[in-house]
Amino acid sequence: MSSASAVAARFLLRGVHVATLRPGGAAYGALRDAAILVEGGRVAWVGAEADLPRVLGPVNDLDGEGRWVTPGLVDCHTHLVFGANRSLEFEERLGGATYEDLARRGGGILSTVRATRAAGEAGLVAASAPRLRLLARRGVTALEIKSGYGLDVDTELRMLRVARSLGMAEGIPVRATLLGAHTLPPEYASRRDEYVDLVCREMIPRAAAEGLADAVDAFCEGIAFTPAECARVLEAGARTGLARRLHADQLTDLGGAALAAHHGAASADHLEHASEEGARAMADAGTVAVLLPGAAYFLRESVAPPVEAFRRLGVPMAVATDLNPGTSPLLDPLLALNLACVVFRLTPEEALAGMTRVGARVLGWGDAMGTVEVGKRADLAVWSVDHPGELAYWIGASPCWRVMRGGALTEGAGA
Ligand code: NIG
Ligand code: FE
Image 1 (cartoon, protein in one colour):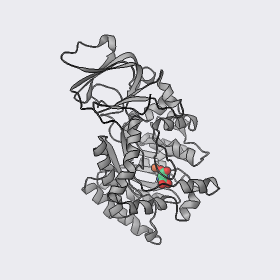
Image 2: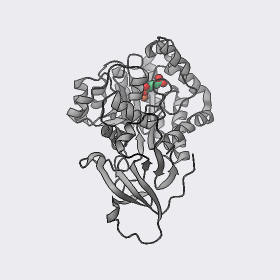
Image 3: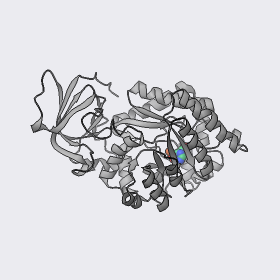
Image 4: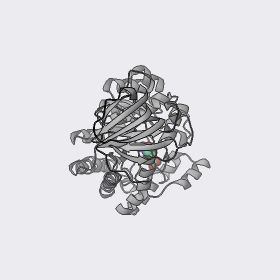
């Protein structure tokens, strides 16, 4: 990736159309024939270029030549840090094994746990940094990274440190989430309660005290943790002041959506099998639905989340890659948008809002990013497209032309 230029004190992006993603106005919050003035890493002015106030003093500028600008993409659910990959299991699944079969045989998440424990901190950075750079070149300007492939105190904390240091090294805001309750490690096979104790009494308090985590998460599923066990994790997160997330109702309906809502979670994620009651509880609590169509596609899931109920009840929908080695080896944020539309039937505008404005809200960054508005971080992506709906339309295009992060301009991945 080309290196970021120094943050110019004042920068003018002109000759563009802007999909601001501000709600309530034109589709995509669109402004045509527009310009964006950036000062001190923030958006200082945005509007029709013809209305641009006289800018005093020297200004670096860039002519977008009619391209579209969106807020930088916010990927609010990833497992980007992991050792090795699971392409051999992919072949086994294509031969007929299910994700649950592999998990029960000690494969699945546990095979990545073995590789992640063995990798060491430097090995994890080396494996993960290229994935982060690829997302960044493709327009991602902020993201969440979960632990969950350590399942012991040292490796979980190491994963969180790696997540933090990757963000610092690449200059990308990262929210780190402790997912100690991802699956039961084999050494606790007959001692489930002791493992949940370890997560609640040691991992979570230490991650919070050492400033390594912003949130906690748990996998509420037959092959992972029961609703009662997940409730303990969410309570421990709340006690230490961390935000709560939940992998909920992905493979079966265990009432995960309502559980997340009752614990004041920022989001419930996956939700293919969530019920109408679950959606209603989320609406009442203001819990966001994080939709992960890459996982549904890669697992050949035939059931889609209750998108129509979310819409009707006013549950905001985020879209994320779920980048992970087992169920969503998805390194292309625009492909996640396409899948959200084709597989889950979101509109392209809903999908794009889901990976900008709503994704930022899930991470607690709704005031700082996610729309193109005065005062927000100058996190922008410039795309070689004629309409913002194309971002969810093309399959495998690389239309990202330039990316600006905190006012610093970088190259995009393609056109
Ligand atoms: O979000 N659902 C659980 N966790 C991940 C998959 C993890 C894995 O299989 O490695 C997910 O899909
Ligand atoms: Fe996940």
